[in-house]
Every structure is written in structure tokens, then in C-alpha cells.
Image (cartoon, rainbow, N blue to C red; front, side, top):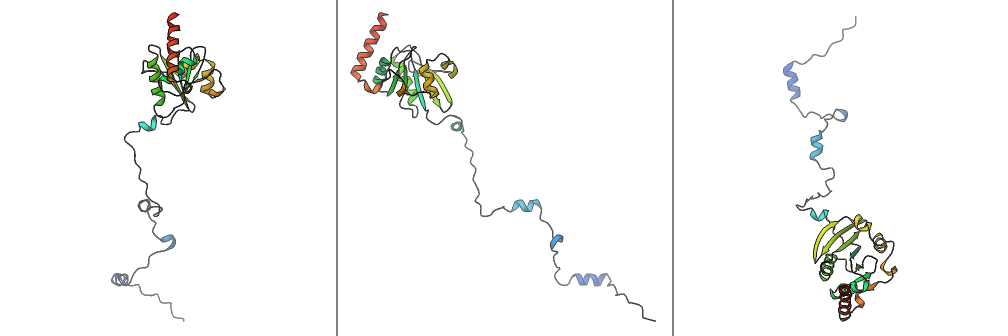
Length: 212
């Protein structure tokens, strides 16, 4: 008879503990390796070489809401009859404009559009023609704004649509960009009127107005 196969003796509890206490235990690899948690991933930057960006939120954001660019066009819509008297008044106020005659009153197309120059021009001209309001109309891109001025003081903000509703054709063409000042007839630049000539023109205009 062949001898029966023998089974290796199993170590008791003390022997098993003795075996576990000797030598380092190999770490599992591959699919059995422990996976990192989302917390571990978030604690390590994705790209250590990428610089951190400092986000600063200003306390005052009014400058972001209000227009900061200069207008592309600024026109004073006046009730002054004739381009020459308006150009004379602007010459006395030391304003460079192109006066455009229309059926309802002359227009002053301003040359200086920087900063508050349009507002200063409106204040100066409305001071010279006391008691008669005028409108400052500006264009920035597709945005129009209209403000009433009288006696050097800024008044109500007007709806541009209402201003253009009864506006002369010359003003509509200027605002929409369909024409330029150079293409209009009867234009009188204030730069071509001396101070002496401006005073004579305004005096003559005032006399004619009183006779009426």
C-alpha cells in the first residue's frame, strides 16, 4: 500500500502571531492598492507651477457702471436763429464749434469732446442766451443721451427719442452718421469769427429781436 499523503501542520495562534511580527509586510499593488479620496486630491494643486491669482473686488464699482469714454458726437441744439449768431456767441465763449443752420434753430457741433468739455460748452452758451433753454445731445456708439440746460445750469435728462421726434433733418443725419458737418451747407465755424466781429453780430441780432 502506498503511504497516505500528509497534510502540513497548521501553526497555532502563537506561531501565527510570531510570523506576522517578523519583517516588513509588502504593500499591495495594482488593483488592490488603496485609492486616494477626493479630499486628498483637492489638497494638492493640479499644477504646482501655475501662479495663484489674487482676486480683488473694489468697494466702489460706480466707475464700472457709468460711461467713461468720450462721446463720438456732441451737439448743442439751440433756438438761436441763424448759424452766424451762434458761432459768434461760441467765439466769445472761446468754444470751437461748427454752427449749422436749421429751420428751428442753429446747431453747435462741438470740436472738443474730451472729459466734461461738452457740459462746459452747454453751460457757457446757455449763460450767454439767458432765459432760452438748449439741449446737449451726445452719442457714444449706439447710445444717445440728451440733457436740458438753461442759464448755465444742467436740467432734466430727456428721452433722446422725444428730442429726435421733432428734430430737423440735419440733426438726424448727424446723429445717425448719415452725413458729416463738411457735407452740410451754410456751416459757420466759430474759429473764423474774431471777438470784435462776434460782438457786432450779437449786438445786431439783439436789435433785430427787439424790433420784432
